[in-house]
Length: 286
Image (tube, rainbow, N blue to C red):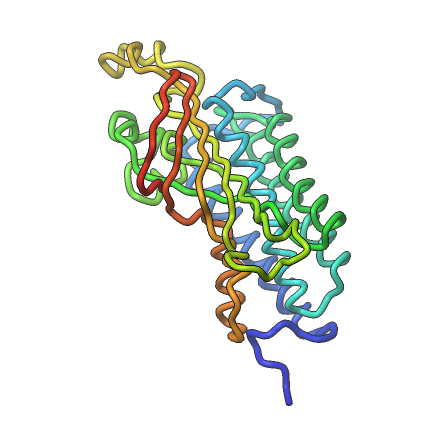
């Protein structure tokens, strides 16, 4: 019986490996072109230079870089495993493609007058890739997933040119609404891995709010009335989550879909502790 398209190849398939490589190359090259048009076209170009942005956005953007590197490495790995490559080759190639792609974006930043090549961004990319590689080498699986969730905030409406004006831009640009998670699966650390609720995870999240500007709000007082009074603060979360890859199904399509969607945190009851000293409970947090 032939191998179904959505099923993982039992041995290396040259056709699938070629298809994955072509698809990755087209997607990444195309996205870099689109990014150049959408993100950099309105800004002047300059000679290559570095820029220290390690203190911006209360480091939410840095955690975002970790998430991007980790997620791209995990998804690339999954594609090469689907093509029948062995675990180690899939891991190293997938991680290399992830790191190379994000480095290309950083080099583009290095030629923009508004930004610059950021060593702290690169460090975050290394940490994200390292989280993926370390778990594969130690456990041959991802027991602690990096995940993302987002909700709309009022801050974007006050500064749409920076924090986004439409739904897509606000999700990508408004750091106030972004939360990044480490979602750990307790069952994966037990001998009885297939016990009840083996799909249930415990998630620890980080976010921040009150950020109208990258470094502070006071510089925006002339642009936004009352900007100085908006308090910037960090948020720490404890929540439940679902490891979709541990939901049993015989469908190759669903397995693949769950693998991709496992990058997004499932909304759930959540406890928040923030740097203002407040504790809040959210019945359903996105």
